[in-house]
Image 1 (cartoon, rainbow over the protein chains, first blue to last red):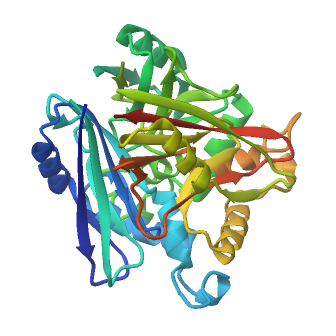
Image 2: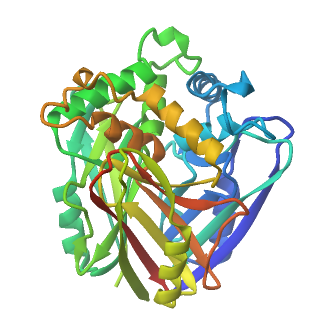
Length: 138
Length: 138
Length: 138
């Protein structure tokens, strides 16, 4: 069994954003030399997500609005977590969008449906944060 | 290390439905000959889910109603994604219910609690769609 | 390839609670002797979650309140699942928080960011329930 590990780093200038990291993960898979196995991609921070969906700007706008309705940032005082911080809503948004994705590796490729793309979802940016890519297989 | 891959295909006649795919995944595991490992089951479409819960029709009715409250289909014009499509809500419902499940394989079986069953959650049906089953182990 | 399996048991005296199970999972990893691989941690019940977030009591209070808003326990009669049961809301809360987490194992350790901790999320307690830890690798 082979294993491979890499950290992807991000420094998003805004509080929230969705970044397509599919090419980065494909590059990791290439470097790993693994042809059959599983690829785990997870946020290493608890106010960010890794998820798989469509690379369509209208949808990303809809996600942003929808997440803000389900877990509003303001008033920050509504959350007990926000004594020294103001990011409680980011911990909630991350739960809806998820911490991680596991992707099958088949014949040396990410085994994806037509429209599947991997995103880093940032909900509390403006600082350096990272994503872990771990691949195991043969 | 062994690996196994299969696609399960669905053509749901309604927009939304929950289908118990546990027997299909058990059949895959049997075919794989793998006795210890991990089994990934994921939707290959971004308007569908694979999730694990109870096979109880009342609960499925409750899920349908609840998801419609959290991410209503109508008015379709409320979503920017819906310029040529009307399925933005399906992309949201899928995030709540999840893209994938990872199940332990122990002694040649899906290592489940008493009531765990695997479901395909369709949120934008009336066309052919598929689920990936990938199993690795020994 | 090595594999390891253990069940962690819980009997939470309240309906809902969040329990930090990171030390238990670290103990499992130690027992497994696995140094590179993947660790799956999943609830074996469909009214409970395993998720990764912050060990901060204010945040857990916020999660409790937020989940109750998104999927209220009462009135129990609003859910069709609640004919002989009163836990339909627990099946929903569990979907938002998730069934499982997959964690990379690197150099014999859970490969975590600074604040990542693993939680058992109970939404229908007052009885014995369990979590599965499955580790594969080398």
